[in-house]
Image (cartoon, rainbow, N blue to C red; front, side, top):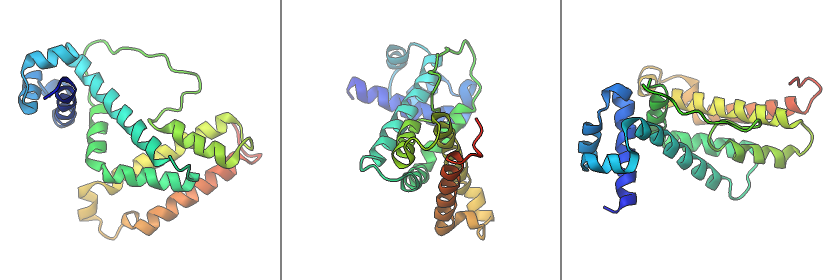
Length: 206
């Protein structure tokens, strides 16, 4: 494997093992063995376990940002883009669930701080959704309101996709309307309409 392929392989394996065993339970030795590389390769690319852990999260965020940007190349409306992002989360539900397991994993050591811009959107790909809102409503709502709507939509996409991707729910709650695709489409359509209407009204409060 090339250096880039080796690094990508280590990140992929580390994502799964951190998700499955947590930060403490996933050893560098086991990650190296599962990735088919030696310990020196992990030390070369990531220096230590803490750096590998954070590199996993950075790689997942960058990939999501890139993928969501590609979903919006034809500049769809907010509702259509929301549905595309939701479908993307469902199609990659295994990776998404692993990413959230890693996020919820407690790590040890000093966590590097990062200064965020005042208008930081939050979720990877948030800027893409915000741009769609900008195209659709222009200056009819304050910037803070459009950022708020972006975060709410992403929160609902994440929450909804995690629920409907759960094998336990799909097996035990077969009649649940959340699992119906028409219901899912209707939910996000009404959510977007309600949010955009609200932030353009006099009822919006920062």
